[in-house]
Length: 208
Image 1 (cartoon, rainbow, N blue to C red):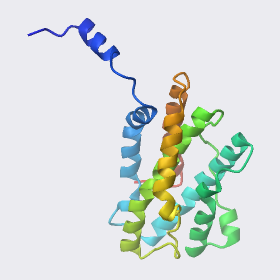
Image 2 (image 1 turned 90 degrees about the horizontal axis):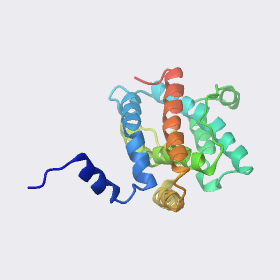
Image 3 (image 1 turned 90 degrees about the vertical axis):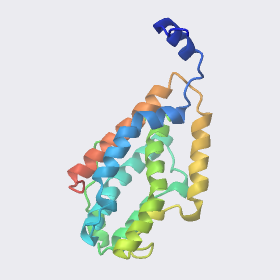
C-alpha cells in the first residue's frame, strides 16, 4: 500500500484536465442557485395570483435595465430570439396592469457589470439558465393558478419550442470561449448576477 502524501496528491491533481467553463460556473453558483430557488415562492403551495403578479413585476424591473445594459455593451439589440421583455409586458397586461402602470414600475439600478465578452457570458449563463428552469415553473403555475401563456404566463415559456435549441446554442458558445485568463471574470459575473438578482427580488418583497 502506497501512502498518499501532499506531494503525490498535488502531482495527481495537476495531471487532471482543467475543469470546463461550464463545470466552473456550476460549482461556483451552486449554493446561490439553491438559495434563490428556495426563497422564491413560485413553487410554494401558498402561491396566489397576487404574489405571482408581484414576482412578474419584479422580473420586469430587473430584465428591462439588464437588457439595456447588454444592448449598450453590444452597441446593438441582442438576438431577437432571446428578447424577453415583450413577453413580460404581455404578462403584466394580462395580469391587469395598464400601459401607464407598466411604464411606472421601478427598475433595478444595481446591475452586474458587463464590460467584456467574458462578463456578458457570465450574466447570460444565469439568465438563460433561469429561462430553461421556466419550463418546470410554467406547469406548476398552470396547475395551481390556471395561468397559461395567454393569461400571464408567457414569460415562463418565452422561448417555447425553441428553448432546448437556444440553450444548447448558448452552451456551444460557452464551450468555444477559450480564454483561461478571462474565465475568472466570467465566473465572477455569474455570481454577481445571482447576488444582484436576489437583492432586487428581496427589495421588491417577493422572497420568502
